[in-house]
Image 1: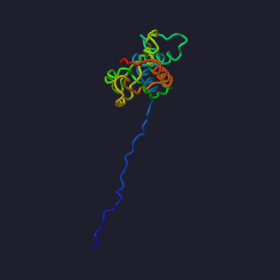
Image 2 (image 1 turned 90 degrees about the horizontal axis):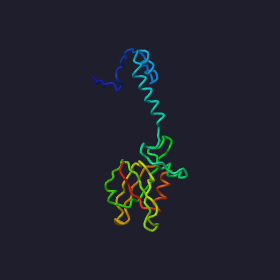
Image 3 (image 1 turned 30 degrees about the vertical axis):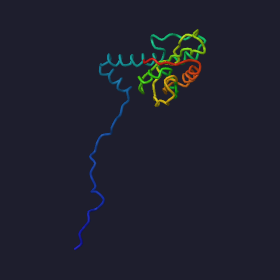
Image 4 (image 1 turned 45 degrees about the horizontal axis):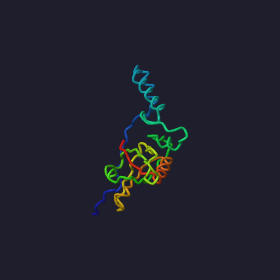
Length: 177
């Protein structure tokens, strides 16, 4: 007598009948809400969405305007880049290493450039990057406190160019946003 082995194929099962799944987008929900007499919440929702679309990205309410001829500073002063702007990683050497120890990845900072001692004190300090996100804080390289500390910021490409130029001619500092 030979023992029968279990079949490797499972027994067929019956799938119960069901109605097709209908997926509706947000436009249909808005129409349905209007049809059912819930026009007030639907209207408020539509107005808020329109206001957010129009308000988009501009300078923050308390930001100082850049001089008309200073296009680079005007582009760098924007807090939130538009969706089409691609962010790059910009390494920046901050003059005060102790300030950098206060930062954590994800913090938002304003980068301030002050003329260095060789250039003299006649130039005023200026904000070269507003609302930049701290991407990384590399380990100290052992150059000492006199040389500052390195911070990697995520900024638009135009702002990275302004930061690179300011880092050569000025001492950079950060202020937490």
